Amino acid sequence: MASQLLLPLNPFTKSASAKLFFTGDDSTLKRKSKHATRVSNGFSLRANAALRSNHSSSVEIPSQWYNIVADLSVKPPPPLHPKTFEPIKPEDLAHLFPNEIIKQEATLERFVDIPEEVLEIYKLWRPTPLIRAKRLEKLLQTPARIYFKYEGGSPAGSHKPNSAVPQAYYNAKEGVKNLVTETGAGQWGSSLAFASSLFGLNCEVWQVANSYHQKPYRRLMMQTWGAKVHPSPSDLTEAGRRILQDDPSSPGSLGIAISEAVEVAARNEDTKYCLGSVLNHVLLHQTVIGEECIKQMEAFGETPDVIIGCTGGGSNFAGLSFPYIREKLKGKINPVIRAVEPSACPSLTKGVYAYDFGDTAGLTPLMKMHTLGHDFIPDPIHSGGLRYHGMAPLISHVYEQGFMEAISIPQNECFQGAIQFARTEGIIPAPEPTHAIAATIREALRCKETGEAKVILMAMCGHGHFDLSSYDKYLRGEMIDLSFSEERIRESLSKVPRVV
Image (cartoon, rainbow, N blue to C red; front, side, top):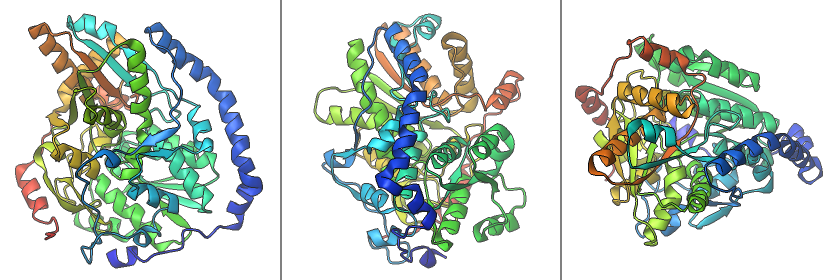
């Protein structure tokens, strides 16, 4: 199957329906974009009001994405062909991604222009507000000043549309009809379903089974935008059937769901695969977060001393931190940059830095990353979006170069912090950013002890309106702190490919 996966297909073939959709020099896109601008005004005004009320000013949406690779003196190791162990060539990826995405994956350019059509859709929710958490500061009685960059105002309720929209756009431009993907908690799946609906694309999603059953409203959200949704593992793919044969009650994992989506893309010429995290082009698209935030912090007259974000695959964390790492490399600032992961799936803090597959079935190229082993299936914690066996290769590389640090926190402490945040700042966080909140509270309480008035900047990547069953379990006192098993990790790491 791996060798079949890497057979190059022609990514430039346009279907008749796709040609009709783009007739007239993208006039359809432009008409949709004008509508997007009109309906965006309400939220833009609210976002700008939030900024003004916290003594900041509105900023422009960035016109370019930032590529951190350009500024790294030591370049990250390339992805490898799973059969030859040679660096992947662009043609090896042509059956999975459109040409422009392949270019962005390998680019060494410092900045990449954001297409006008994408910018117009971004206006539905961008710029997103930077808010000072004064009430949380008061509750904690800390001299620290806490700011959070809030991405929950997007149509899908998280940061994920920042990449879903350009991915759908580039696929539609090249005549692709169908998109397939995986999703954990459902934030990425709902984002791609939303983006696909804007560009007239069919969307099919494999959702990790545990989350599929825990979060029915995320599934319904995807279906409302027109997507087909399957619990993963499913009996629709060879990869899924193999997992179910071994474990009929498998809770699933992002690695398994990726295998299923990639398998479907590989066997259908009119179908492309989209990924919501991990790969370079996804992290690139998310840098709109950090680029906006730098300008907003300047408007506050503040410079962050500590930058904190949750990490699963890494897109939200990279989106905020990479532009700040650029400024750190220039010598302009020197913040501590801290990634926070769940104790039950600690790829950065407990994994090994090695070449491994991005999926469970071994269909993807090999990537040098911090990994727990590609067939490691984390326990079904409530932060479904963080249940991934590996960390983004770029984040792993930056971590190895010493530009950031990482910690892990159990889920009960995270939800305790989420309750404190919700009852002071009013926003109910998704389970994923509760890890950043818990780490921020730890840092703020340290400042209380030392008297340091640090500026803490936190990534708040989405709301938890569809995650209330998790809060119900916490409030009932039924949440369990699941942790990784050393024996399971040793077993899964023994299957990591040995690349010399």
